[in-house]
Amino acid sequence: MAVCDPVRGMHSLFRNALPQQLFAAPPVLAHPQSWDSFDSDDGFTSMEELLRQNAEDIAAVIIEPIVQGAGGMRIYSPAYLVKLRKLCSELEVLLIFDEIATGFGRTGKLFAAEHAQVTPDIMCVGKALTGGYCTLGATITSKDVAHGVSGPDGTLPLMHGPTFMANPLACAIAAASIRLLLQGPWQERVRAIEKQLDQELRPLKDHALVSDVRVLGAIGVVELHSPPKEPAKLQQALVQQGVWLRPFGQTIYTMPPYVISKQQLRSITEAISNVLDQGIELTD
Image 1: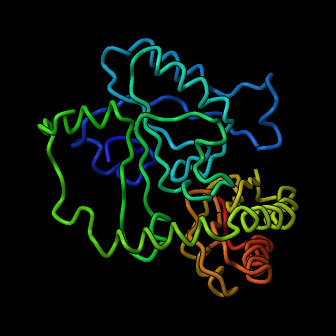
Image 2 (image 1 turned 45 degrees about the vertical axis):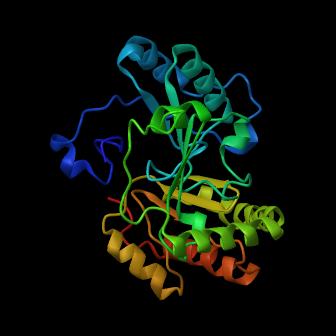
């Protein structure tokens, strides 16, 4: 809760009761087509200054790699993560990747970290870990971190665990889900979804209510100029179109299952287009 956005985050009501963290400015938005541009500013300066000035007091940096989900479905350059990995290693600060939303193929790579070809010290996974059938999360660490938690000789200096950790049913579901994913043509399916989302959402960039359209892997985002005046009305309008989406802030986004058909995905993109054309008091 303490490491969520203190202003716009879902836990903002509790900010006075939570430990105060340091927050860097978010990475600069960057579409995948511009990732190879070395001249563009990726926004790393804010993070570097914050880290260098406070390195002795910082235990770790936590970030959602490539796509900031609850931070506004922001897609940014892998170059940012390359710089961050190098700086964290230099300053001996742990690097944590939150891959709960981006893991297991969602961005076109099995894990989003692969876009930057870097390895964090700690990786958090969940959601797609079980294919959404059952609640389960996991924390993956380097050997150094694991030894720091459990002790190289098993003396467990930081022993802690919830009662239902490693729930057998959830773990069995996760094992089956991962096996199905890896044995199937998930890369091909995600590429097809990415291509269709790009073709059908990209034209909305010219809509008067839209400020940006972003697509990466099986993620499609339409960002409005400002948040909807009445989000409930927007969601109800989408339901009336026959699709269930959860607009977040000023974004309308979709993260469809990889087995979705072309027609089903078209129903989603058409619904987004239709509600924009209806002008349902979307903005102030």
